[in-house]
Amino acid sequence: MSKFELNPQALSRREFMAKSAALGLSAAVASTIWAESGLADTPKKGGHFVLGLKGGESTNTLDPALSTSHVTAKALRAFGNTLTIVTADGDIAPSIAESWEASGDGKVWTFRIRKGVEFHNGKTLTPEDVQQTLARHSNEDAQSGALGIMRGIEDIRVDGDYVVVTLTTPNADLPYLMSDYHLVMQPGGGMDNPAEGISTGAYKVVADEPGVRYGFDKFANHWDDSVGHYDSHEILVLNDDTARSAALQSGQVHAMNIVPPRTAKLFGRAPGININATSGRGHYIFVMHCDTAPFDKKDLRLALKYAINREQMVENVLRGYGSVGNDIPINEAYPLFDDTMEQRAFDLAKASEHYKASGHDGSPIVLHVSDAAFAGAVDAAQLFQLSAQEAGIPLEIQREPADGYWSEVWNNKPFCASYWGGRPVQDQMWSVGYLSTADWNDTRFKNEQFDALLLKARSELDETKRKELYGQMARIVWEEGGLINPMFNQFIDGYSDKVTGWGAHANGDLMDGYVASRTWFA
Image 1 (cartoon, one colour):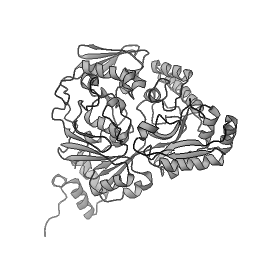
Image 2: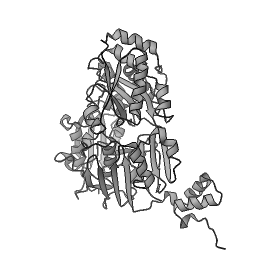
Image 3: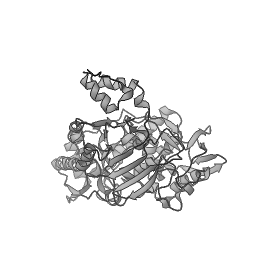
Image 4: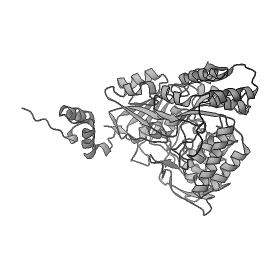
């Protein structure tokens, strides 16, 4: 009779788990044994890792400044590096910047630039490249998604091995802002050809087919050997939920983003599939342009805010994979969150009252929507339409094509569905999306009092006082803004049990986009 051994050192994880089950061990016990064997923490090199992603368009570009979709954001994480990174615990950690320090007043920040870093074209990264990269994103002509946070910078200069950043007002959160995914380093700052896909990341771009696929090879001269374990990596654009799920089940892809909440629990029971749901800062929303009729009337905006049933959407659209929103982009996942704010309730009487006060002529109020905005966006819009009609509000839905949604609809149409993944700190979220001068101010919200409070909060080093300022800002947006935030979503990722090294990250889905760099095959 042959001996049936349970030796983690001699088996793959799948084989080990199967034999453990045959011996009557629970999955939890088997997983513990596997982890304690040390193999779970020992990266295995090699293989071709494929991601199936929703959120890609034929209009996409690898210019970091212009990245607006899930797909290009994940591509930037694969081939690029920023000055700093945010860890899974929410701390700030070094990347291209080895270290940094601030002046006593928090107005001047000095970043020591890592030596021995090579671009994919063979050029050595210099502090001048860093300076030029930051300068390009500070230029309005670049139309950078990071412009909102770069506008607070007065000067960027090189001093030997250092890059010195001088701010217009002090900001204790500047190292967090430098982790923004748009700010990947480029040779010469990307001034000549920003879309060529050259940076310093663990993988180099070998295929660029917008709306279809991106291909990457391991960069042999990458400066950090603790990341980038696969020989090659590929992103397939699979916007259709069914096709993306089928690709993971069939083994065509090894991981996928945005598992539809309505099927997540059932999908997670499929053989060889793992589901990871992480609470964080992401939010599924509807945005109104405050400077465009009829949304330039505060009463109309309030009517729509009171006419949406948040609890119903969390239950029916998110299927419990999330929490109720409150018409601000901030929740308890953020440091210095003000939990004393009133929760806006679903109130048809108030919705009707504000609608009548707005003087609207009764013509259709058109909401542009596509499931490209977020999983279940069309269903959410239909629920919104029904509740709004109960209040006498003539809400009409116009479905838009998925391809081109982020370039033709979002930030262009005056009322549409949208999605934000959130940011690691409040200053970044407010600066990118709500400051009057921000390019990504997708509600066209312009409020001098809000802007002044934001600048004051940046320079306030006392956290108690800064929390009070953030609370005041939130209340202004809650009352005056064009944001309808019914729900904060969980990040629901699906991945094959062939993949290990996986970890939750509150800052974004697929390990904040670093999944290809930080996982490996079991």
